[in-house]
Length: 301
Image (cartoon, rainbow, N blue to C red; front, top):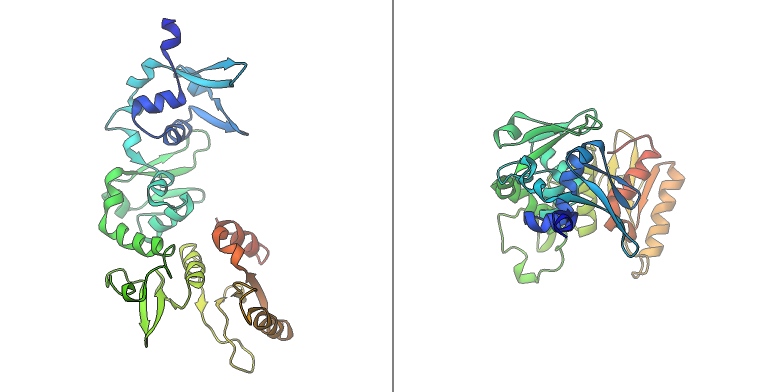
C-alpha cells in the first residue's frame, strides 16, 4: 500500500503542484520527459531516468505515473521553469492559439523567426525572456516570465486582437466608449474597424482576415481597385503573388449570391487569380489560408 501511495498519475501530480494538468503535460513534453504517440503519452528515456513508469488496469488501460519524490525536482521549483511560459501557455491565458500568440510577440519585436522555431530578440531578453531549445530536435523556442502577460504594450495589442470576437456586439452608444482601444473608427457616422496594421475595414470578417495576413507577415492591400474597367474593388490583394482575395460572406443574405456570381465573373473574364473565402472559413483561418496560399506557391507557418 505504501508503494502505491508513493506514485502519482499526471493528474494527481498536477494537482499537487497546483498547476493545470494540460500545463504539466506540456512542461514534461517540452523538457523531453514524455512524447505524444497517437492519442496517448509515452515515456522517453529521459522520463524513465527521472523515475517515470507505466501503470495499468483492465478498466483504465495504461498510464504514466511518477514517484512522489519528483515533486522536489528543480523542474517544479516555485521560481523555475513552470513560472516561465511558452507561447502556447500564454495563449491559453489569452484565449489565443500558440501560433497567434507567437506572431503577436513577433509583431512586438520580442522574438523573431529562426530557420525553425523562434529566437529571442534583445528587446525580448530585456523583458525576461529565456531562449531554450527542444531536447530531441534542437528547435529553438522562447519562454517568458509570468509577469509579461501584464505588460501594458502587450495588453494594448491584445485588446485589438481579442476585440475581434466582440465587434458588432456593442450597442450603438458603446461603440466609442474606449478611445484607447484604437479599434473602432467613425467614418462619417458609420462604424468601421482599424486592424493592427492600420487598415480601416467595415466588417468583422474583413478585420479578421486582414489581421491574419498582417500577423503572418504577408504584404497586402485592402480595398484595391481591380485593374479592369468599372468601379470594382477587391477585399485584399497580395502583390507578391498577384493574387486577389474575396470574402463572400453568407450566401443566404439578400442579394449576396447574385453579387458574388457577378463579381466572380469579373475575375474570370479578366484572368485575375482569385482566392475565395466563405463564412465557414472564418473560425479556422489558421487551417484554411495556409492550405489555399500554398497552392499559389506561398508557404505560411
